[in-house]
Length: 109
Length: 116
Image (tube, rainbow over all chains, first blue to last red; front, side, top):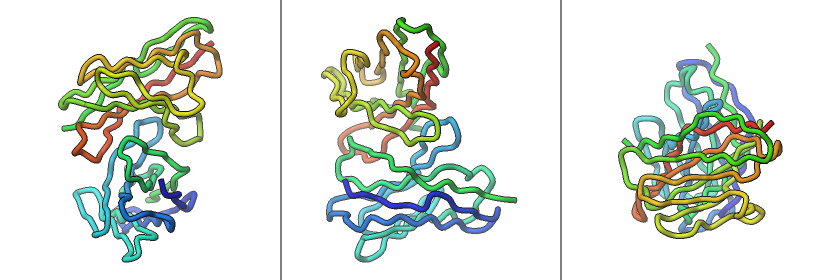
C-alpha cells in the first residue's frame, strides 16, 4: 500500500467547506484512494473512494490530482457533527486497510 | 443498508478469563470480515481477516492462539480473547465486506474491553 500523509489537525468554521488534504506520492496505478472518518469512540464510517476521476456522493467530494499523487476530501458545508478523525488510505487490496494517524477535524461554531 | 453490529458494546472481565465478541452483518452477507484493535489516542490496527468457512489470516505480531476468530456463517464472526490480560484492554472493532466485487468495508460500532 502506498504511504499516505495527512496533517494532524485542522479547524473549520461551521457552515463552511472543509478541505482535507492527503498526500500519496508513491501511489501505484491500481491503488484506490479511500476516505473514512471516525467519530469519537465509534467505528469508522465509509465516506468515499476513487481511482482516477473525481467523485461525489451525498457526504462529500473527492478530488484526485491528475498525477494521482494527492487528493482532497471536501465536506461542502461542515457541521458540528462532522468533527472527527478523517483517514485517507491508498490500497489495491480491499482486504488490507491500514489506517494511518489521520486528520482531526475540529468544526467550530 | 450495510449495517454491522457488535455485541457486547463494552465488557469488563478478570485477568485470566476469556471473552467473546460477536460481529454481525445485519442486512447483507459478508464474505469477508475483519478485526481491528485500537488503543487510546492511536489509530486502528488490523488484527486479522476472516472468510466464511475458512481459517482466519492473522497480521504479523498477532497471536492466533490468543485471539481466536471464527467466521461460521455469512453474517457472523466472533473474536475470542483467551486468557485475557490487562494489556489486552482495548477497543475492538470489526468490519465486513459484502463480496469480492464490493470495495467498501463497513464497520461495527466497536467493543470496549477492560481487563482487570
